[in-house]
Length: 372
Image (spheres, rainbow, N blue to C red):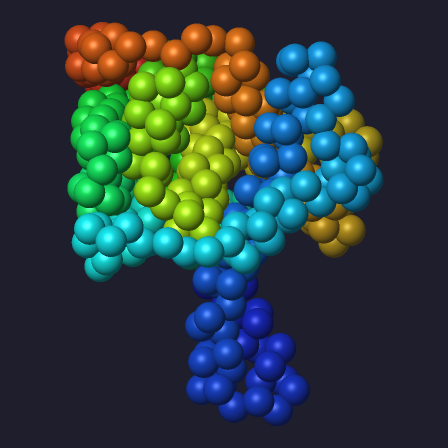
């Protein structure tokens, strides 16, 4: 089943039934996936920022935001409004074009990557056959924007931050990609849908985390480094580089960096859930639960409830890793830049290569267990 096409076909059919010409219905559909993607990513950022504030407060034995809405839930919206109305300043000796393009190149690829994330069995905006390859390709654009922002600012701290960001991204992209290739090899597909479906047979025992424990750890460490989360926030280390490549930015240009980091964190957590934790699948297969209760799997209301719970399951898995990332920020000290690069090139890269070769060997030896 192709959920992307199913959603599009259902939408067009509803409009044509109401008397709208098919061509007009298709034109109306075209911007909707992007709007849905922007809304989903923005809501994810607002929730993550609120969690960051509350969890950091709990870690430091504070209350955190309390009065800006119930339990401070409107604090992230207040932050966003403040950035929207702040003055946008471009330094007199900066390159205006590159200075403006930098934040856009950082944020845009991350937002586009949400198109290939399946939130549920029937909730995928675009079922691309090479979804994983597309995501890896898009993620490689981000370092260009970071380097561009650092160079265009005409500030030594910004330049150092941009160079660090580019070096860090390049160092951790390769282990990240190799850990994902091992999952792709087991699933025989680059489609995120196929990867989730391949984990659906035996409930929690069929999830890739058991067959790829080393790849899972590599992916999570590399994802934190790609998101520049502590202990890997060297490009914007306040004690050394003021704010790194963000030093000269203000207003919504700074806001784009701020949003981009959280959007990337939520995206990474969603991909962990999809690649290693079975996506929308339950720890116990729905078919098994239905058989125990004595309900047919084809019952319409059961399918509706299963679909809604599947979306909830994906988000719960993802936000568990967002919680871990926030907790790490307030419990683990920052590493040095040489330690950061050594971890990427001298440890994670060889281990990810060995993991990939071992996966290939085990797949040939035990094709049933490893997706042959």
